[in-house]
Image (cartoon, rainbow, N blue to C red; front, side, top):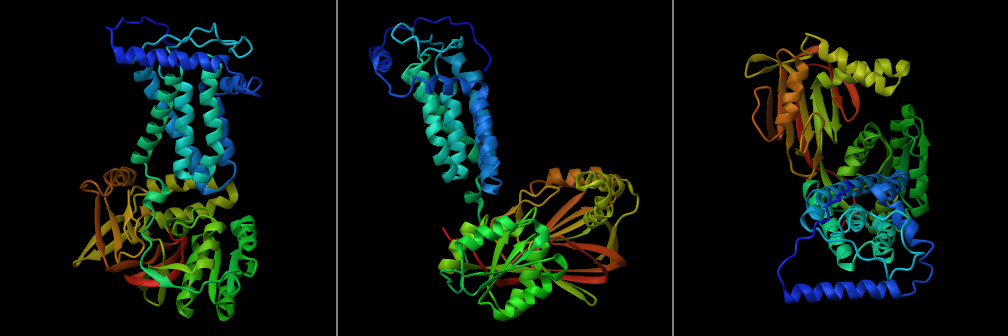
Length: 495
């Protein structure tokens, strides 16, 4: 917090109600100073100092994020964003608008007083604002972690009165401002619960109280052993099959023959294979996120084994759309996205170098090499004319807040294909950036979009790479992409 040493107190006119409230505030401060707080003396002053400059909350955010669950990481990030907004508001508006001097320390026992007294104005309390902002932000994203953080935040706020550096009204005002900052952040960036897909259309799926009848196939390469064990703890009757990547499809077929419900744990490619198997056998699908991105599971509001287990026990399920493509003898389905053009080229270039120089350096090198080329990776025929394209993106259902990477879907059964095109021309990097900034909000000469239920393309050159749900294959000639509305039944924890 930047020091504000100008403690000039303007002398306002007399106001009976305000004067009465100030006297009450001072009396409450004196009562708190005179009161014996058991066990508080060795704790609250240290806790108050630890919250200086937000150090306590940064450490708490790191501890929450270390739990390695997506919801915990989002809760930590939301807590810090709320804290930042609250601190900015306090320092630019709060303390400069009401120049209230700090309380006199005479009634406060010496053992409680801070070694270094703050020199900023008193109203409102910055520590209380930061504590309330962080705790509220965390709770809005994860009520469980919010319950853990709330007692610490309350103690920090109370420590400011206990140590004699704030009046009670300073703390109340700071806490209200901090909580307001957290809700303001939520208005700007909705929580996962706010943007989750509607729980419809609901589907009938077998309720498996202890998991018996559920066969879960897990891809060992996804590094999700902990999540699989956690799911087995929740559903001890479920059968778990762990296998290598090249064995996944065969194990899924075997599992489908003996299962009432098919489960899968892995990345988007593994989930795609499981969805294809579930469709062929008419089985409901249980998806446990186990890869790097897990777009489908997260858009389905399934984040961990606990939520998925609850849905399986209750038989809670919904029907979702599936996308299907055909090109010559090749066909397949996609749950998330399908793309032609620069993105599949980038994926292949990245895979070529990842084993030699590592994943992140390979990403950068692939982007540089692909974006520097003068060759358009894609040419298609539309209305009898050939058009060069840098990118053609097709989403299974409408993606909102679309940039260079897809955003989130708020409806997984809308019957639409979300088609985005970046037209050809010079300077692909600038065109892609222009399309990202334009998104769905404005018209751009480099960017076009449409939502359809079926898409036909012709004139695709032989060997053109196609990326879908993390997989890359070659296509040639013509291609059709269509929707299979509400084709797949998936377990989903219902609100």
